[in-house]
Image 1 (tube, rainbow, N blue to C red):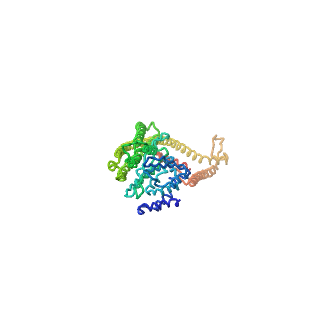
Image 2 (image 1 turned 90 degrees about the vertical axis):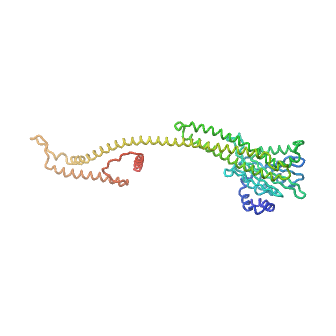
Image 3 (image 1 turned 120 degrees about the vertical axis):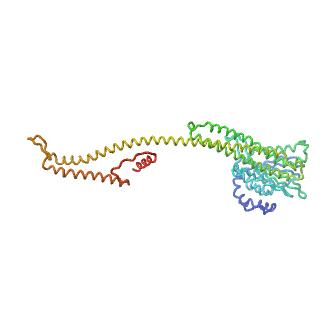
Length: 497
């Protein structure tokens, strides 16, 4: 890949000031970044249209690499009588690569010794209009005594009703090299135009302009002056083909904003869902980004028009009428139009942000209402836990009483069943039950056994607390649950158990 571009870089260093060319950087850019800009398939769409002194020659559309290579190498670079040559390179879509392969592009650049500043415009293709470069036109104007160069790109929107989103972001690249007459050679103008699609309105207008020039009797009042002013006219075609689109795009954005703004004004937190509020905020933020992007592109286009106005006036030189030397026609109207679009964006963007804030407040209210609902549910849960805790305390107290009573009576029942009823006698004479003399045996057995049973119960409680790594508390009043944190602690404690 590096060898492809080295002949072009060698020619550039011979024809342009080497001190102003970073050949190493250019070589790296052309090697690493042209893979997404230029096609890797065997598809070519390059049109060459020539304007001669006698009129326009039928344009040639090259569709194969062999035909384009033959057209670039077999014909002379400057045919006799050539006034203007327009080389149009097409892409199938804004984000698709240009339909020319890297070797053929390197051959074209080297054949016409294209100024290296055009590389910056070339590398903008193969991808949608980048947000970081939306305000940059990469304008370069260099007028010398020998030759003059103009290179730039224009970012714009174009209506596309076949898509869900009816507007597409596009850019068009322009390179203009005016060859001044030298010795026996006649000067001519070379244009290389990068189109985002094959049905570009700019391409149609250029073909109509050149064809109209060749018709007999067309614009007889201009005559030869029209041919000299044709390069300036081509630049005017580029600007006028796309600047007017901003009006309708901004109207589309304003219509969308009106719809979303009405929804934001009438939306009630109790009636709308959080998902609806979130979608509304997302749509408004996307609309705000679109308006900001349009504003930046219009500012970049305004700076482009200012730079072109000065560059073309100096480029035309003494070959045109004084009116064209002083100021290219129509550029003042284009500047006024772009300023109006910028002011519209400056008015629209704050209103969209206000709607975003309103929709954001509604979304915050959704969160607050959900929080209040959860708080009410937790309070109900706390109240239920209080009642449940009280019932548990009562049941626990009853169980403990029964346990201690059983601990007292169970050993006695065991001892009685062991010894029988021998500790009590029935006196027939007195007709009553009397305690036997060996009753102390019952007491001596029952009391220690009761104490041993109680100690076993306490030991079991201690072992259970030790095994679960909890503090051992035999007698403790349960805590009162008052807030959510205590509920969480109780739930976690139960989960641990």
